[in-house]
Length: 447
Length: 99
Image (cartoon, each protein chain N blue to C red):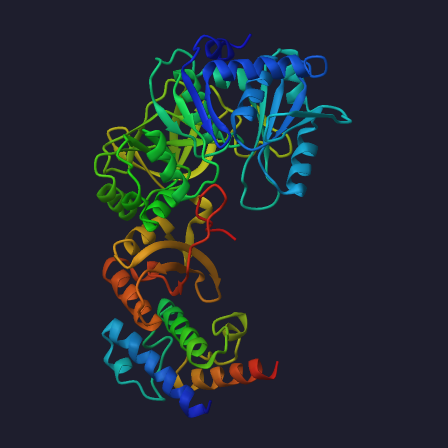
């Protein structure tokens, strides 16, 4: 039996989970997990590849645990786009597809299954459970990667039991969401699952369930500011906000600190390939962080962060391992600055660096400068092709006052010119209603 | 839109850039003011082009791309001086209307 499933079974009446269908204890979770296991046991065997098509809720988490317990290989799919679902099932070469209705009724479909991927066979032979995740790759098909799930879950072992209430923001098809889930379960914490991931809904839940920890992306935190949810709801239960998945800017952190004065801010860092690192922020006001993780080594090569972790993926199912070096280092694609004393600062993605006539421009630097203007609610800086300079800097800006567009552009340019070298000043400024972000609340800088 | 009005628009934009760059020749721009190579570097052209594209789009409702491969491969650069740039813009606007 898996130790985590075992542990959950010992926690009894402790509050485990809240979703749109109700409130559940650890005993409920354990019971539902056993129910599913009994239900599928005659069909699903150790080493089978099983897709879970479901929202993130009490039932899907129970099913996830039941499958972990028999060492299956799990493919969580929360997409609602048929083509995407089919793609993911095909790439994973699933043996079974499971669907859950809103009452948790399990619908099991056996798939015709061809030859398995070598990495899947390896897991099966070693009687390890597996997890297939898809990267949200900005171009082309998403990459499918496979983790040794037992090893990943093992890294949460030995946590002290804590009475904490955490909101789980990302879904379990994402390493960050999975991290919050496993962390919470291993600590016996209470998990609050939002039905909709919008600022209003999340704030309502924080008030209602006195949530203490909120993991979120900077883009989402800014949506909370724009929606003024702190003025509408009592968010005083919040003790800590963790932010990650994209770079935070100084300008936004200053605004957040003003609104959430007593809340601690912690930068998190992780990749689908290596799992989530344990990090320490220098302070709540600082974007400098330290990677302090016994399971993880790092080094910086040409400004890029390279990681090697004990919980990293076994490999990809549909792509080359080109992001890995022969000796197992994962090139994250994230640019960092070593600020000394072991602290790092994340400055952007190397794919998002804008090249203006040979000069490098980091979107986050420009965004941070723009954020100093109080009339700017949100901003996204990206590069576009330019016949003269190769690329030029474009800023999409959400302006919260009713000013003449020409005047707004002039003011923005003047502000940037005062603070930035001329090649960094946005040549084009689009005044927009909202900036574009992905369904995981990450800014979309590459089209 | 007459040639004359476009020239005015170009001169206004050149003056705006001139003010940004403390360049007297551009602040007092006329039809004959030289641009790229003399008063403007390539970044300067990029800014001028953007301001012009914005104004043309805002004032005339016509979207044109001033800096593209075609502009770069003209025998004499349209960014040489105010007059050449104005002619080039006029030509692009007429093409846009015809299409």
